[in-house]
Amino acid sequence: MKNIFKTIALGVGILSMSSCSDFLDQTSPSEMNTTTVYNNSYYTKLALNKVYGDLTLDQTYSQYIPIVWGLNSDCELVDGLGETSTSTTNNRGAMNYNVIPGWGDISKLWDSMYKIIENANMIIEGVEGSKLLEVDNAEKMTMLQHKGQALTLRGMIYYDLVKFFGDIPFKIETAKPDLSNAYIGKTDRDEIMDQLILDLEEAIEYLPWAGESDYSTEYATKGYAHSLLANIALSRAGWHIREAAKEGYETADFSDPTYPTQRCDAETRTKMYNLAQKHLSAVITSGVHKLNPSIENHWYLINQRKLDETYRENIFEIPMGLAKSSELGYTVGVRINGASDYYGAKGNSSGKLKLTAPYFYSFEKNDLRRDLTCATYQLKETDKVLKEEMLGNTPFALYCAKWDIRKMTKEWRDAAKSAGEAKCMTGINVVRMRYPQVLLMYAEVVNELSGPDGVGDAGISARDALKEVHKRAFKEANKNTSVQQIDAISSKEDFFSAIVDENAWELAGEGFRKFDLIRWNLLSSKIDDFKTAYKAELDNGTYPEKLYFKYKPDTYEIDMSSVCWYQEPEDKTGYESKDFFGKEKTATTQTQLTENLPLISAGLNATVTNRYLLPIASSSISDSNGTLYNSYGYTN
Image (cartoon, rainbow, N blue to C red; front, side):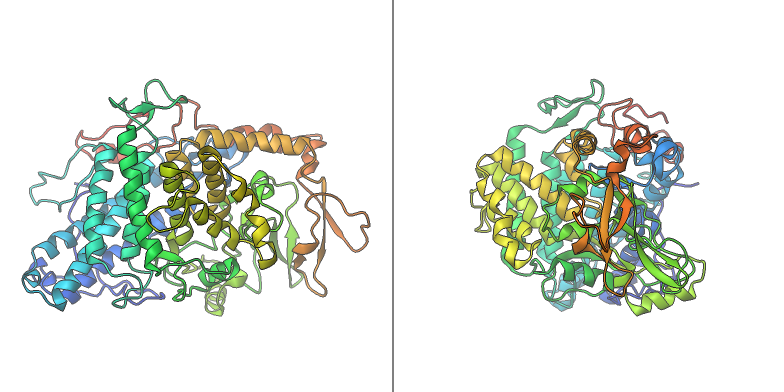
């Protein structure tokens, strides 16, 4: 009998992975009993490694969560346009909010995530019953650190499940042999988040900071527990579509009559804002995590699979294995269109995650993040020459340049070449929290509590925190000019809008934007704004009909400083040109405007207002012994 909560055996054999860290060794005796495991810190670590190992599956954090399930937002799109966007049984349709419970990927993620939860529950209970806690010594501290990691990782998993599905089964004990706790119904997500906050407060007491006790940012550390707790607190205070109206909650103006969009009362919100501020301030004042002064170097190190032990901007990154896991740089990233002598017969990347023309043009001209985030080109090998090619009139299909195989190691290139036609996993770590997110959340809560110039527990104002993120994106000569608009903001409302914009410029493509928009109740309106902006910018001439650019001397690499993004050059000598976004305005068949644009995210409000949550899979419902069901207008 299949059940999502069935006990997972500890002895699962060996998972061999090449990673920045070696802690994914999962060798353990297959018949080892739990008493032996949890009275030995080394064996407990092996059990914990199983939890980390399952975070590297395609259906968890190697592909689904960081690349696909964070789509669509106002600036990020799944690569499903036209008819593919209306499919109900693949991710191209699902991320345009057209999905049915029969889509097979739902149960794959659901089962894998609950398997990780079960393993985490085993560790937590095992440590709590361990004799090693009876004596105050180094072994006790190590065991409690293992428990702290398990609590934090379980919290991350449950929080992601809540973001995807809403109210879900919540089980924080191991499965019982008699199956008495195997079939459980849904728990209200507010209750889940309240418990996760308590769990993380406990975990914080046990965990070291990154850089202490041999902990790197590939471990769940004190910094990540603080940051995750703050993120959950803000979500607890934010907006959610509900299965039914909750008494005492505030209902949004844009809301479904049957499945209302609500948030908690003002007193609870203030409590959550203060809680978030406390934990964000702990990260800021610790000095452990900082912004890398070079945004270019930050992304170079990620592509190189090198941990930044100087700034530790990545607060937690899931360790992946070269040729074993991670589709960052393959399913998302600068595209290699077809086979290449440089990067192998398979080619790279499929570019499942796309960015948009209005997003590209929203950046200030000197913002370094624009070209580090948006690739308006692809790579293609012709006659043994690998060349950058401008994409043309593809306003909803820009690639995400944060992951770029040209920045990856020779080790990866060699593995990709030897893989032939097979897919070669990049081994690039999946980042689950960055220091810019901490600063932006801090700016948000301090502004909410006391305005842009209010000073929070970290000793800096909301304005200071926002400016720190924004200034980093500009060269030294442009830094002071870049923050003039932030300096001029006076109202809380305008300052919040600036935070929302900065969130997009800093985090697009990383799997976070959609869920921030949801808790702000801005997902639907911001998607509408994106569509309106495209039409307006097409009409007012923001987009050139032809894009003029030059290649660097004696290379096939586009000189990005030469690109005429805003108007044609007076003297076109020496320029290459390509039909561009503005061509749509005079096109005989306006495919982008009249066919593709209306179908993007069209399912979000088609049947139920704000239906961004996914259904529970039909197979999970049939396996639940009658305890689970679908809401939000989905059938079982």
